[in-house]
Image (cartoon, rainbow, N blue to C red; front, side, top):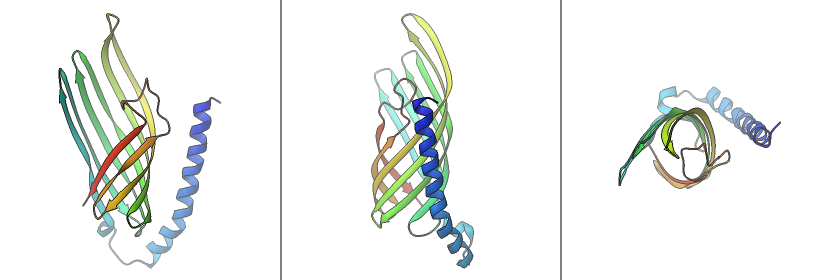
Length: 178
């Protein structure tokens, strides 16, 4: 087993334990609740645009979360990213599963597993290269939450510099949900 596979196995076990821990709370609340499922669903996500010398980047990532209780939310999202730099192009698309846990009303922890299909074309040493592959990311984050907006930073524990579409394992974020 490689080091990355071992690390991924440990992270998956940790994630399963966290879900199991919170599932008892969620099940008890669901049994005692008479609210409609859709009353606890919130929609949001993010988008981005970037322009520069011979560069363009656009991304969109809609998400939906289910507010299990005042502390825990779970959900999923879609991701689409397009980048062009001179003659190089990148298209990345995929999905993610996410969870948010508020340890205090204004402090939110997050875990998000993202799986992206990456298609890129670029020139390297005079040769045209096409590269198509799947890339997983597991983001662990912390943020300051105020009503529907959360500001924070997240870290991709599976980050690989030569495969990730992100320039760094650390990323600031802003989340908005309605």
